[in-house]
Image 1 (cartoon, rainbow, N blue to C red):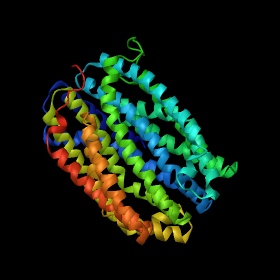
Image 2 (image 1 turned 120 degrees about the vertical axis):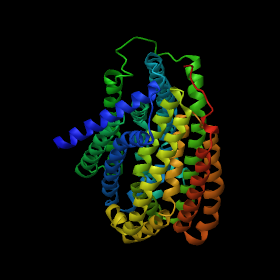
Image 3 (image 1 turned 90 degrees about the vertical axis):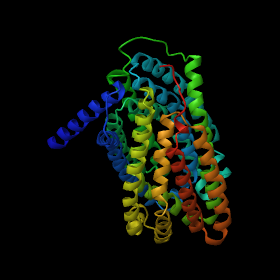
Image 4 (image 1 turned 60 degrees about the vertical axis):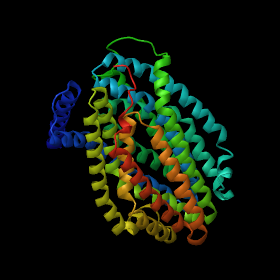
Length: 469
């Protein structure tokens, strides 16, 4: 353990030295750029490993309750994604500004943006929480769920909605820390959150016999504790952003809000586009029955195994592109984007091969229903052929966000999701059931990866200047 800690400390030292050179205009060789992408990505990737493991355990706990409870969570999961996506997009409107200011070494302005961000996202998250509570009762019926699972689905979404402000603070605080290049603390806290999630879920689901509601409450409490801890570290311990260094107003300024809106509004649109398409997909899948709903939900959880490197590379691409632009080094920003995209795609490809080979075993971890396992494994093997280019789209999108280029990627995602995926699904699902939907998704993800690769190979995404530096 001591050797691991020393190794992480050494990696952290390398990262700080390279980031300082980036911000100050120093030279970074090609190898230095690769090392910086890797050292920033590594904590996030390790956190994703733990997160996915905990999601497997979490889903397995619910899966052992039967297909009905699993289907009830799967029914509303796309709606929880759309709410979470709004929260992340709102935080990104401010964190991208912070990344640019940190890259320019204007830490006082970065802290001013942080103060305004905390006030703004709090107001926004309270609104989202109230909205979620209000629609929790009719939502499962709107989504076409069977009557047998609607009560559990309502209970799950109600608890989720009540804790949205804590989730928002966790998202925003993590994004702010990552904007400074601090990937380690968010990663550590996210791992601890996953551990708490599993422990709380075990207590509430089994010991207190709360079933689906216990799963929601366990996750919500873990997010609440993590959100408080993440915010505390940000405002007290962050070298660049701790708010004890100076004083300032938390009331948002027009210029800051305008810039944040320019970044976040296309991301809100994209969230509606992508998550709305997911909800539409849920409506398409729901009439196929509980086995298909459960297999679809578990397969989505299982496939996340492949995307662990892409998540880490996406976060590092956002931070490095943002800081490079703040340091007025756009050519370096483009190189970081290409390096991160290539590394993410390569690592995900290896994991996709493993997922194809071990698809049945991955599904057996999540469910004991043989029909669910068999159907889910077929879906995973189809998806393995899309993972490489999906990773490209994820990392390339992260680079675009770091540059504040969010409108065109939103248009890409609209075309990809609604024209390609939903269009094909409507044609294929009546003939092939759930397998038809996953074939449509495979085709769409490959298409999305290609158009994002085309975007990132060009230079037009680097043309914005978001903040006054």
